[in-house]
Image (cartoon, rainbow, N blue to C red; front, side, top):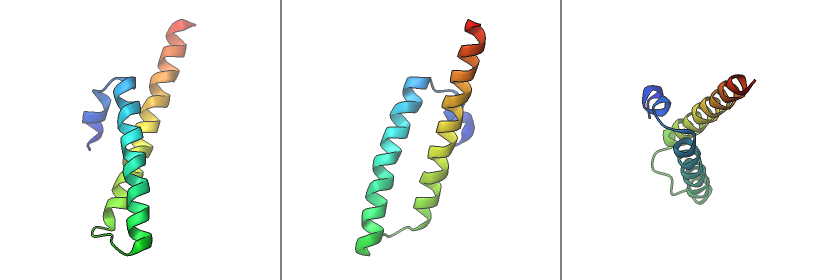
Length: 69
């Protein structure tokens, strides 16, 4: 998922997306351990997407805190 697409989402949508990706990451790890993983590059993509989402969520939290102060 591209960064521009992620920036358009609300904090709640980002949190849902992060939860879904974490579940996918767990499934990918299980597949890797059992030798059934078809696309090993997907692990890297999911991990980086989760990091992008967490960064955006923290930026949104910081901007909300600044507006409240």
